[in-house]
View (cartoon, one colour):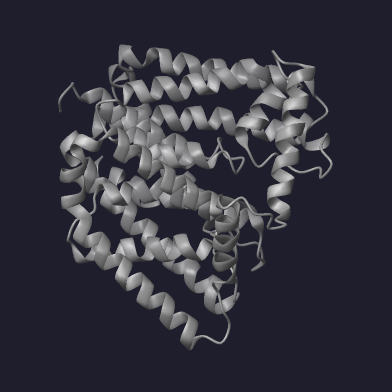
Length: 391
């Protein structure tokens, strides 16, 4: 089982990309799904008592089941929307991912060994980022980083995937940061990728999460900072030097997107009009979402309503607005309740702070169904369920 768990953590980064597949005739399966299926089969043959959850976690699972039922009801309001049938399937799979990961974190991984598996995840994530950085810079000559390729075409989806991936995995890296040279190199790659993405949403999410952490955990600040401050400084210096060399040595400037995004972020902070179309769109989306909520405030308008009832015919780029518009106050409150209860169950650990950038990032993207979030959440909850106050 230990070898399978190592393989599971190594494969986790691949839940964010479908570029790596096993092709069997006409059947194409992503590699990460294969690993998850193997673990699921192994869990099926073990003692059923091991599959039981902690009684204190039952309310959280109940909330998630209620969340799924609300999705089913919202889909029934708009039965003609086939696109959101896939959304229902994603929610159902998310709950399965959450449960399996919870059992793994609760029953099979001792809290003292968890960081060992986290390192495997970070090493695998870093290798994946290096591969995509190489492709996007030297092959595609892209102005931003993504981790999803579509016949070597640049897509916004690829950029959003990279943004979410770093929002979920970067905090884990900071949690194990030390003076180990390999970890410092991983941090360098992450810093480089974070800048190269050129995503203001990601930068804001990481910065706000760090600020909240430092405010709420200020009594531990000295311990936290002393454990990785030198490593962080070294990695930042290496990153700055590397960025400078890229600007000097490469004929095309791959950081145009990052520079432009940073400039617009400064202008927004200063309250100046920067004629940013994405900001204007988001303002319209927020107003539209609130108007949709006013029409049917309790149960919402049904999945898919926002997509076809806004001037741009785009998704909301904000999951909280999506929930209010399409699932009403009830769907929104249930999801917020999930966040609150999860925070309560993780209160004796740093794990909720690992998830905080993702929850903030949902203000800028539609992504609450992504598998990696539910897998990591399940693992964190499983680990927290082993702990007692003060550990």
